[in-house]
Image (cartoon, rainbow, N blue to C red):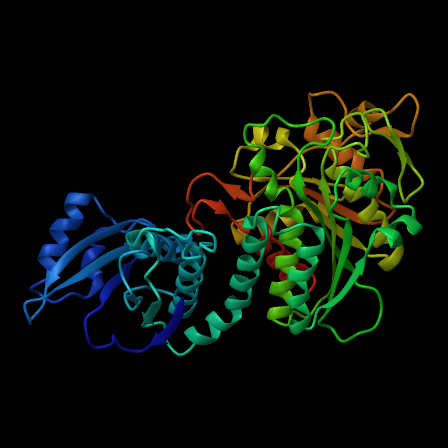
Length: 492
């Protein structure tokens, strides 16, 4: 979808959307002429429209040449809503017009405050809400095919283009994550995930890949144990972006769980809904998308992203319940349930990045537990941290970005639940507190003095219904969160 900014409305036939703030007389601020204003005012009254963020009133107004112009009034809410209101308006407009119009003109002239920022966030929302992955839909009916190819935003001022240029890399990173998460498991598996990420080299990202032989030499038996039953070889993908130009290890590491398909292994999942497990690599997808966004905007940060990539399948070589594996850290793990595989992947990835780069802060992201969806539904990602200051900065970034987080406790009482009678630990505890004991497992692999946060995003990477910035399917959750976290805490 092409986006451009102009000072004046273009000539010719096009669909027009006028953005207005909330409050009494919202429609009157749209700047319509005396002939058309009463008609639209009546339509707004009938729809009880008061400029609420994302609210829309639509009407066809007669033109001077016996034609009718499709005209929409879209609300951005109150000033306290900030750019979120503009995003809700942009997303709602595209959701309504994506398959019916070719060009949309959006006029933000009636808005108060920073119209350049509002215009840029309308563009961001329109781009994200219009994202679709129709690659495999060969018989899509014509009326269901996207037609909206251009959005012209009017009245944002001279700073609108620059504001959008700053946001576009974020949109590209989110789209990259969505692509990875959406592709089926016969297309995206550990090796092909790496191949897709090779494109980041063009942005200046350094890529390193460890194959199974290299990981075996390092003792990464927890990660490799998950991969035993699959014909697809595991990979450890390392992406480094150094936008500071300074030598030395990166202070921040982002680590993602990349189980490209999860059958549960020998502890096999029920058949119903198993197809959803193609997105069990959503944490790795978010890390890759965040690295794409950071490099795309030339972020002044030194950061490394690590993705543990495996496929969890059952066959005669697959890991069994009751097996004991030795992790790269030297700690031993009794595998009680092979469907609790994500933590086995992450623990070796966490150890590797600490030994290799010695980061001061680590944030891992994983679709780790179904228990997290039971606890939070699809509204928040779960947050666990060994440092209160880190937790607060992540929550703040989540609130600011819209990728919201809710913090859960850690503690010795939970930690004892994963003690094993024959090994250092077992990979699952009892059913109560399942997300917490999973986090406690990961915490055992964090070195003293390292600030660490674990984000359980099981309920957030895939949506069963459309949202403000996404259709059904992959959401791209985590990319905005990490981008904002880096901008607020690691860039000067």
